[in-house]
Amino acid sequence: MKLGAQMIMLWENGAMSLRSILSNKGRAFLTALGVMIGVASVIGLTALGQGARVSVEGRLSHLGANLLIIYSGEPRGTSLVRQRTTNIAPMLTREDLTFLDSLPQELVTKTAPESSMNAQLKVENRNAAATVIGTDPDYPDVRNFRPVYGAFFTELDVESRRNVAAIGVQVYRDLFPDGRDPLGQTIRINGFPFQVVAIMEEKGSPTQDASVLIPFSTYRRSLSGSDNYAIINVQAASPEVMYELQEIIERELLSLRRVPSMEFANFYIANQMDLISTVTGVADTFTLLLGGIAAISLLVGGIGIMNIMLVSVAERTREIGVRMALGAKPRHIMTQFLTEAIILSAGGGTIGVLLGNLFSWGAQRFGGLASLVTPESVLLAFSFALATGLFFGGYPAYRASRLDPIEALRYE
Image 1: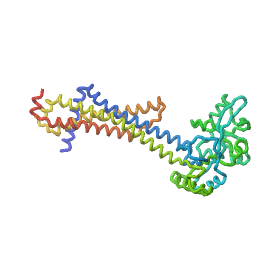
Image 2: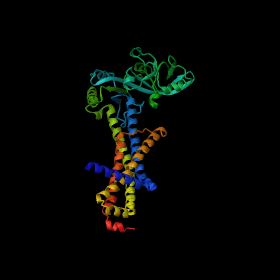
Image 3: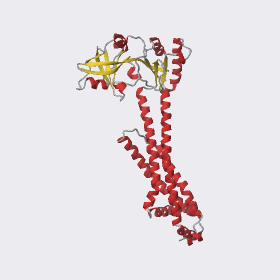
Image 4: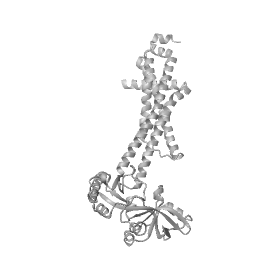
């Protein structure tokens, strides 16, 4: 029975609060506007932060899964993908590759050596500049860069030192603008003839899309003359073993070179997990920063609710006195004004959620920005809107509940 009476009281409070709000729609809308903008800003800006994080992680996955890249020379920056330079002689040896290939499958799935140089390509009277990469048949799997037309060269092509090439999509567009089938066509790389056997998938990366992949044995014989590699790509068996694998590789390669520490080594290792952790940390900080900035507008909206509720208490002082004279207790008055504040904040929060999703969609659809709305961000923003209504509506509600009934009835 008591529960039923409380439910009826809550219903009456809600109905009375709605009537009070709807009696002045313009003021109610302006009061809730700050909450709408705050919630929309929190959702929209955190969606941009999350979208940036997912976008970068997706781009990293395009490099290959569980990737360790062993580079020749001194470390240059912190990026997993470094610009190739032709003025550093390759220092990774066949002995290094043999050791990596001998590691158990529990640690290493595949390896793919590579060396590269800038070269001039020619087909008939058309020319193009490209990066020529000498590698082996496992390169597409290790670097997640596969042919979409034709077939990548095989181990037999490597052993036979065949002049075959898999070309990037930008190379295809430059050399075959008429759209003809390039398979079986001859292109010249620094004057040497190569037969096209495949077109690689489009990555959206100038380095990969404007590249030509050829067997390393052919690259060594025709272009570089060096038996060493500039890079060795190592695909770890799982993310869990990447740091252990990196330690093993560093230790063994230092031993092969009779070098005491990495400080004196002529190689360095870029770990995909390090870059992912860095990017994730930066993206999370960026998202928190954006969310914090947006949350300020929620606080401003809360102050607006408090101001309007104080005005409402002043305007309805006589009404409050009449209710108290008829038996309403302070808690009833306080509950009514708190209900009004919550309705305003909840209504503004609901519209803000819709606006935030609309902003996120528009940023992705028309702005070309990666954007991702998560349930957590929606729940957090809406909960914060309700908390704002409770907090900033609390003082006006308390003021209303503490009015003296006699003084309230005399109020004009």
